[in-house]
Amino acid sequence: MRISTSNMFDASILTLQQRQQQMQDAQQRLTSGKRIEKASDDPTAAARAERALTAIGRIDANQRALEASRNGMQLSESALGDASELLQQVREAVVAAGNASYSDPERQGLASKIAGLRTQLLSIANRSDGAGGFLFGGQGSSDPPFLDEPTGVRYTGTPGAVQTGNLENFPLTVDGRLAWLQARSGNGTFSTSSLPNTVTGLPAKTWIDAGRVTNPSQLTGNDYQIQISGSGAGATYNVTNTTTGAVVKSDTFISGKSIEFDGVSVILSGAAEDGDAFNLQASAPGMSVFGVIDQAITELNSPQRSSIQIAQSNSSRLRDIDAVMVNLQNVRSQVGERLNNLDGSEQRMADNKLYNQSERSSAEDLDMVQGISDFQNQQSGYDAALKTYAMVQKMSLFQYISM
Image (cartoon, rainbow, N blue to C red):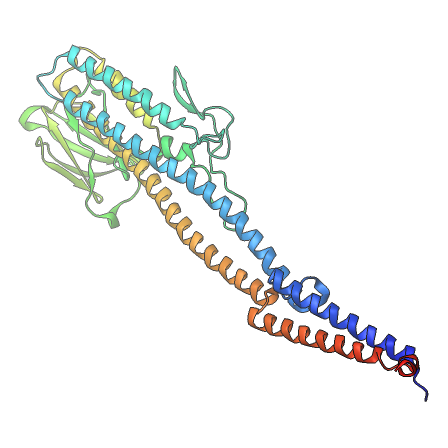
């Protein structure tokens, strides 16, 4: 086999070019810090890196959704806190109105104060989220969700809540109808009310408190009516289950003494009059913050009420104000729990993102120590190739004859 001089030159040049390319590739990896520049460098590792990069993109999108949700929930929690403070001022005004020494004009002055607080509460209920929506707009409303009409405040939004639509469905709004218009009536279990005297048709001379539950296991959920028979010291009362028609209790009327039956207890106070009657109905959702305030304003503006009427009115309104405050506090607690959940989700996302960043780095990043060593090896190889080519150049016949 004959090996020509040109073949040796070609082989040397080819080796030199390969060494130069390898050294350039090593230098490129050192410059970029990446072991994989293109998928063909390592298809398996490139696929790992791409999956990790996709996961990081999803996490970034979820983090943006989480921040939007946190902003909405923080604003909602603040709004509910402001509303609770205003309702506390309404309650204090109603308590003051129960002062027996107050005149009708003084109570009307308190009614004006409550009307101003009502305006502020309506403004809070229609508070914007700063992004063109409303905190209590439910599932969406282009206009303020609460509309003040002559018959009362009406909810124009869609019940429910807007969510981000990602895997965890972070909430962006609060169900305004649930927060402002769906408090349970009465004390949360049953509601008491005074009826016109069945004999005279006039307001009762006795008043009933909000009542309380004494034994939850005995509750029936039925409606009751308490009827007073006779007047003065000889007055008695009958408690009738109006759902079944059965008389569940009868006894002598004593002002201020508890009347207990079927797991509940109520107190009747005042001078008993034949025909005074009271209802007890199972509590139900649907009581409006604004309806309660409107009723309080109407009653405070009513002149020439008797002390019994004032006592009954104040007891009922305080009961209802407490009920709507409890409902707002419950919704506020739910919003606070959502904020806690967002904190937990944020931590999980951060951990997941860090894992995927580590996975991507492991798949495509260059070990700098190994990279520098490889570059030095390639550089040494290239130097050797250059020296070899220089020596091969001198091994021609013409070079030999010229010597």
